[in-house]
Length: 432
Image 1 (cartoon, rainbow, N blue to C red):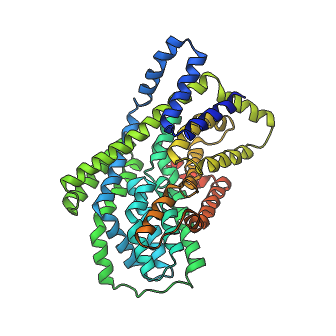
Image 2: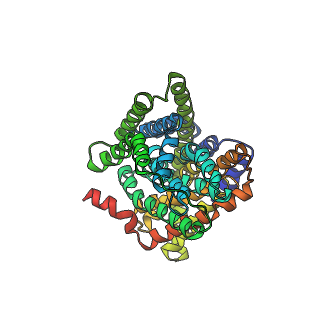
Image 3: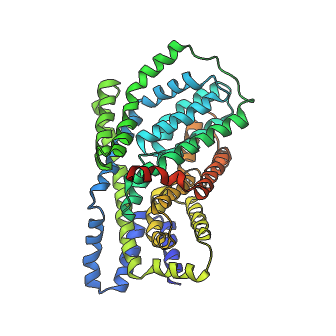
């Protein structure tokens, strides 16, 4: 009953327009005031919120956000897409395949879904439509491929999951690599099977053009090599990798490509500070809420209830997936992650699931939130792009365009449930 009351109060506050961070903080503080001595609760609230941010791991978040913003403002995305076009454009559905490959590459640079879509959305969709691709394919494949930004490492949600659950972020990064590549493969196979015979073919680029395009972006390959290679080899931690990626991306934007000027850098700092502040506010509110629900033993109550049902543990995973899907229709990824993980993590741990595997499962399930109406952020970004291109699509049309890829994400979830080693093999190899 108390859990239902919390849910009701939570949704009422959100419907009143209160930001998620303050909603969580108010609920957490309210529970503490109700359960503890008011004077003690007043001391605990600021202390918990401060301590929640006193974690060196969280330094990685603003560093990766800065990297993503530099990539976004530098115009490197256009060069990368044109290079992929030169190498893949002549294949059946080549431009769409080039879009998926480029999005996966940028996912390994930015760790952000929105940054990936904003970086490539206009350029890639313009090229596809200009070459006779249906707009449903052009916009749908970009919105869906942007989801790779939170799965292929580095991933902001994985850093937050690691901070909340005290799991190794480097292991989470490695665990997300194979599922990310599998999803890239599923998207490409779908494009080939469904669209290859319906799309116009391009003339192959000459080898000279291909080599020239590769020379333009060769420096970009240093970033994922530094990030993933450095973490995997043990050369530096995730936080150090984030800092190095920022320095390297800044060097590329200022020195190599010379597209980042002082004014652009100030805009990058402002945007990064705003995004970081939002995430940190939500995180501190969520951890206060998480502390409060442990005081009232809410996770234990949920665990006892599930145990009393005497159902298979995979039924519990199915229920969790359903909750993620439902919340994803109305909330964005970070909020869902920070609200739900403190509640369900003890239950999943008690059921004996691998906690790194569950982290990847959570991130993949939350990928769906990005392209699920009515609040799928990637859908709204692509709607704005379609309006600029005079090919406006509403939320229903954009949702239909992204729907096949939503099914492929569900297929990926089934695959990692049937074959957990897709997730656990690389972290095991790294630890070994």
